[in-house]
Amino acid sequence: MRNRLPLEGIKVLDLNRFLPGQYAAMLMAEAGAEVIKIEDPGFRATIFRMLQGREASSEEEKKWNAVYVLDRGKKSLALDLKTDAGKEVFLRLAEKTDVIIEGFRPGVTKKLGIDYDTIKEMNSKVIYCAVTGYGQDGPYQMLPARDLTCMGLSGILGVVNEGRFPPIVPGTKIADLASSMYCTIGILMALAARDKSGRGQFVDISMVDGAVSWLTAPLMNYYFSGNVPGPGAVYLSGKRPGYNVYRTKDGKYISIALREPKFWKKLCNKLGRGDLLPLQNPDDDKFDEVVSALQEVFLSKTRDELFEEFKDIGVGKVYTLDELDSDPQIRHRRMIVDIDVPGVGMVKQAGNPVKLSDTPLEIRSLSPARGQHTMDILLEAGYSEERIKEFYENDVVA
Image 1 (tube, helix red, strand yellow):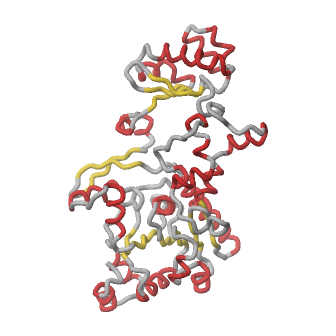
Image 2 (cartoon, one colour):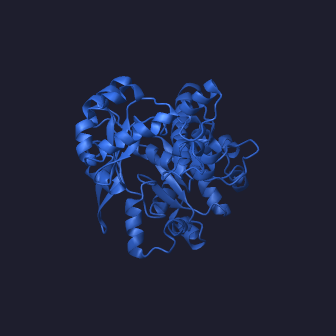
Image 3 (spheres, rainbow, N blue to C red):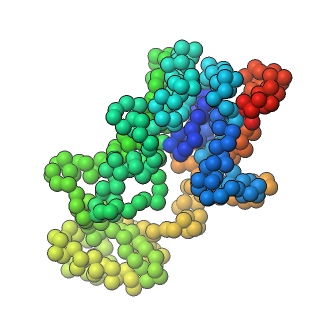
C-alpha cells in the first residue's frame, strides 16, 4: 500500500488567474491536496489571446490545455463571483476549506464579499494567502504590478547583464516565481502553526518582497563595501573570467563557474595555461586579456566536447529549450515528462521539482477543461440538481 501524499486531506480554493498563486496551488495539488480552481468563465480565452495574439481554434485549445502546467492536478469550477449566487457558492465551499489562495489587488475580495475577515468568521481555521505585486500595505499597494516592474523595483534588473544599463529582460519570470515559492512556504508554515494553535491566519505575499530576498549576495556585498555595482562589478554576473559564458566551435555556449581557486588551477592546468593561474580575479586592465585567452581555447572545440573534458571542474552546457529533453540528468530527474493525452497524443511538460523519499509527489491529472468539475463540486457541496440547473441557466456557473 502506498504512503499517503503529504497534503492529502487538505482542501484548497484557488482564485488565481496568473502564475504566482497558480503554481503554488499546483504544487499543493501534486502533494495530494484537493485543489478547486475557481475560474472566471471567460478568462482562459483571454489568456490565450494575451499570449498568442489571436483566438484559439478548437484543436489549439485542446493542445494548449494538454501542455498547460499551472492548473495540473486541480478541479475546475467555472463560477461568476460577481453574482449573488456565485458568492453564495464560494462561501459555502470556503466554510469547509483549509486554504484559499488569491491574486487580486488589495481590496478586491472585500468588494466581492469573500475576503479573509468575512471568511474567518465562518471558518476560523482557514489559511488565506494573498499574492500581490507590492503587498497588502505601503504606498505602492494599489499600483498595477507585473513581473518586469517588480523585478525593476526589487533591484534584480540592476544587477543582471553585469550591472550594465539598460538591463536585459530575463526570459523567465523571476518575481512571479519567487512569490510563488514563498506563497507555498508561507501556507505550509501556517498549516504547521495551525496544528499547534488550531487557528488559521492571513498570509501576505509580495512579488517585490520575494525578488528582493533573492538578492542576498549582491546586497551583502553592497552593504559591506558601500559601493553600488557598476558595469562588470557584480561578482556573479560576469566580473570574473572563471565565472562566465563562452562561445564554442559549433556556435553554442558553455558556462564555467570556478569560484574556488582549486578548480581554477585545474582548468589552467588542463588548458596548458599556467600563466593564467594568478589571474583568477584580474584587475580591470587584465580582464579582457584573460577572457580572450579562454575564449580562444574554447573556440577550438564543440560545446559537448568541452563539457566531457571539463565537467568535473564546474563547466556546464548552455541549453536552448529544444535541447532540455535530451539531457540524461534532466530526464533522469523527470523534469521533462511525456504524457499521453487522449485526442491530442504525446505531449511534454515540465516535471515537479520537489522530490520526497517516502511520499513522492505525482502528476495525478492534467489541467482540467474550464468548468469540467462544476457539477460534481456543486453536488458534493449539497446543491440539488434542480438548483444547479438554475445556476447554469443564469450563467452563475459554466
